[in-house]
Image 1 (cartoon, one colour):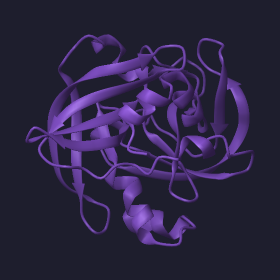
Image 2: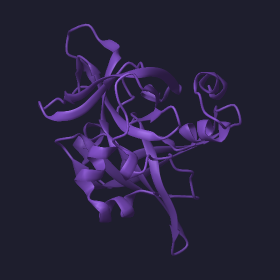
Image 3: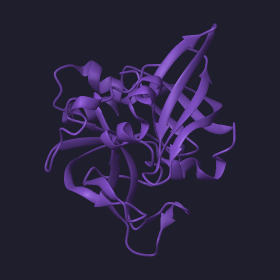
Length: 232
């Protein structure tokens, strides 16, 4: 997996490609990214960014499944451990959430695009998605940004569309620019029903996917919470 991703990403060094995988986690059989990891009072903690609809039915629970991984040099999962966390922030309108987990060590984080640069993307920009549908295997796909200021499930503008092929279970996972920086959170594919995680009965078009940009997440949080939740 690591090698196939490396051949398609135009990055100067392979460490950034590896980081696309090492910040990745599975959240309740969907996807997410570690955006901050730290040690406090001899305990290790991590914040994970994901989609709200992934954990909507467990919003008040302190037992949201999180599968944390270690990867081999080839990008294959060499070790995984399931732990349980809770929601510390969420926004239903833009379908995003942040979870907190107590981990057993410090974890690498996704390389998140800085807030001041988070709007610097446009049509035909190359992007990459990482997801783990149904805990089967990691899927790394490539595409282009295809539309801007698209509507979300609630008819709200502010999302972007892309052709990086997505699968059921990619929800909450990262979408990266060609420099290895996370610029958004994958939310849905065409004809996707977030309540049932199934197609709505129409043909599913997996290469028409939608994401919320991190610029919107930063605006929703405000500077103080961005500093709290992200390792930027």
